[in-house]
Amino acid sequence: MSAETLAGIYFPLTANQGSGYHEIEACPALKPWIRCFWVYTEQCDQIVIPDTCMDIILGADEAGRSEIFFCGINDFTFTSLNDNTRSGLRLIGIRFYFWAVASFCIGSLKNVRNTQDQMENTFPGWAEGLKQAFDEAESLEALWPKWETFLLQHQQADPIPPVLYEAAELIIRRKGVLAIAELADELGLKKRWMERKFLDFYGVSGKRLSLLIRYQLIWQACLQDHDFNVQDTVADYGFYDQAHLLNFFKKYHSQRLSFFSKTAKR
Image 1 (spheres, one colour):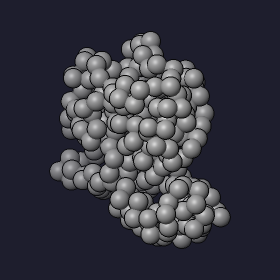
Image 2 (image 1 turned 30 degrees about the vertical axis):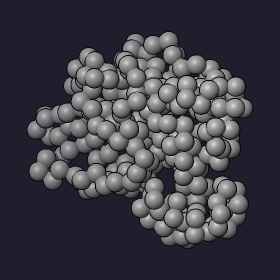
Image 3 (image 1 turned 135 degrees about the vertical axis):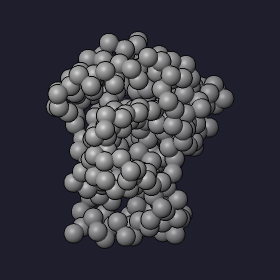
Image 4 (image 1 turned 90 degrees about the horizontal axis):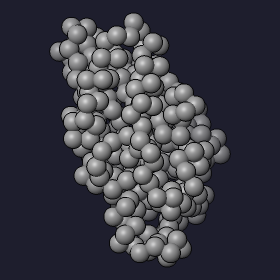
């Protein structure tokens, strides 16, 4: 079990950010760990939904001012407000899968949920290196190979126990409909040990990760399945009834699933 396995079965989606948002695929050597590089250039607010990923984000404006920070895994939808006082502000990011960050950072990820960190606590020395690459690149097209080289140079031996990859795979394949006690029993693990390792390596508990993956897979089905049906989803994802599903989705997305299920077919 490995990062390659998980990347082959799980591809989380963010909210549609319009024409100003673009994703760039990582090189083959990084694809099991890096969901994408991305850039956002529109001068407007952004909707950020739980995508089970973590990001390093660099903001740069026309005046040459820049800042860089790490965003841990988040479990609620929020609006990232645009700074209208900064002309030409661009946001440029590296999006890590939830299982990837442990191979690049130092220390435990147990305290990163819903946080923004100024890099030094989690990625010491990275801010200067990534900013230098940005300053030296003549274009965004020239930046991505520089960042890829930086990432490959700073990637460590994968610290995640194979059984924890197996746990994540089972959660994904069962659509997040899996009690954590049952998961631990199935893998022959002590629940307490497993939950501690989830926090250290994935940044959230097993239960919370299951809920977020469940939400993500419903969101993907809503966007991608032309035959998406709310009632079928109730059965497929283990909900008691339609109201249970709709309330669950709204909790994580802030808008009702029925709205998206209609617009997805247009």
